[in-house]
Length: 468
Image (cartoon, rainbow, N blue to C red; front, top):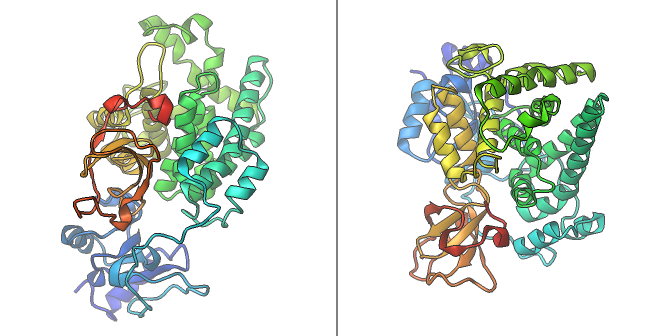
């Protein structure tokens, strides 16, 4: 039997299994897996399985059965599991082997103790939008970063911490634009340094930089599509389990992949409408220009040129410049293509209005196994989530809220800011609800999201509430 402990076959399989990445991971026979465990690693590549998330909670018997049918061993993280399978992270956590018992206790769904220094979400947005986030503000309201462990910072505090980091990246990108326009070589080391700082922010809380991008979309004077792509590329890469270095390379690719557009004729670059066939052929040359600029800048990042040169290739061979198809494109370049398309659709273009997140994701779904592989599209949708930060939602109480941040384990239970009461009257002091902790509606039922709403629903002004 696949799950029987102690057999020679299982011992051999265990030796082949990927070693745990952190001391908090525990090797478990698939037959011993249970609903409530959080899976962080399999005994086979993720791409060979139907599981879209590299890291997921076993929430039902169907998922458990599928997992057992595919794997002999899995790695779980007790600190992210729930119920009887939960265990707190200790100072001297040691990874266990198959069958080793671990101290456990049920997860306690309680709000954290109140912190007088914890800034409110609207307060933070106001500070960010008014440009009042300086080093003293960050230190006073956000404190010190809690190491490099993932998901260790609230979105409010990380918004404060990420603001100067993002501002520096904007400054670096502006310098890149100046250098290219004046035929100087961009400083790729400076680019990589700024991207690496943003990568650390993504690790602490990815929703913070995603919120900053949303804010910038309403400030047309400072919005850069390239930084939008950079942030989404890194969030996607972290979602798929990329290393710090790999995530940074993806971010640099996002910042540099369209830099060659500065070498295009002004009439093509700034045309307020769709390009003609001839103009499109001219525009395609930006890929070659981008790769040339990177090469001349002394690139040392592994895989960067491959990503940039292939991010417009498509699964069916209809892309450019080489017309590559299928697996010849490569995972990272295909990820770059999906992100670039999504960011283009959700930002204002010269010839079209931006789409809502839901509409853009629907467009990507229609391109599954046509322009992009289904696995990459599905993984990106899992990354973005049904209710990404900034989404307007209707609650089962009839109240209207905006998603502040996602819950990475239970994505249908986000943290929300309630903007309108059940009668659709604006709340003077909008309360924050964390649906993970099952707060009760006036009727006594746990709050839940009924549906996502389009931007501007119920006459909510996106520029007032900073939504897209």
